[in-house]
Image 1 (cartoon, rainbow, N blue to C red):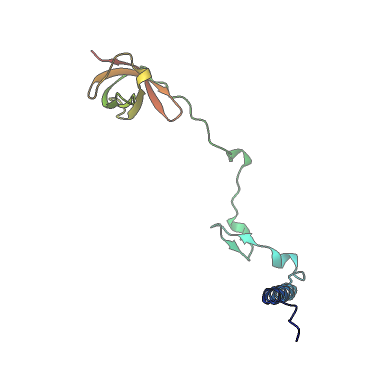
Image 2 (image 1 turned 90 degrees about the horizontal axis):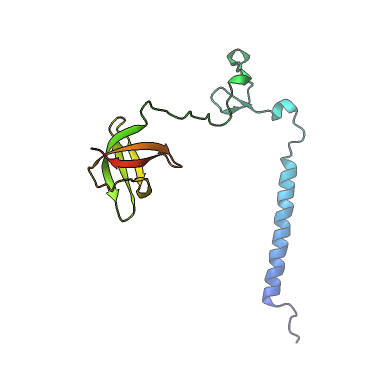
Length: 151
């Protein structure tokens, strides 16, 4: 009696190949059954209502808003530089880390916290020191420069 030429793995691979072919044929038939080529343009149209939702009904022309093209802004408008009358401000050092070389000054006029780097110091400062400084805009926001101890 002769041994079968097909091994178990060959039989399994053949079964998988046939199943894949059958599935592909079924998907093709399903696509053809659900074909939407016969629809008219009006049936394929989708509309967006005043709330931004997609709907099948066209919008009411009485609710149409007229927008001037000149009023549309693309991008972010540039903010003008803020120029104060007195460029020298006063404040109190709320935090300063000498080992890392930076800290923060609380401006007495605006009560905002302004970053200060050790390179912007003229006099050495410590926490709770009263200082005078100038503000310069950096990459991440306002930076204090020309920081001196107030007398």
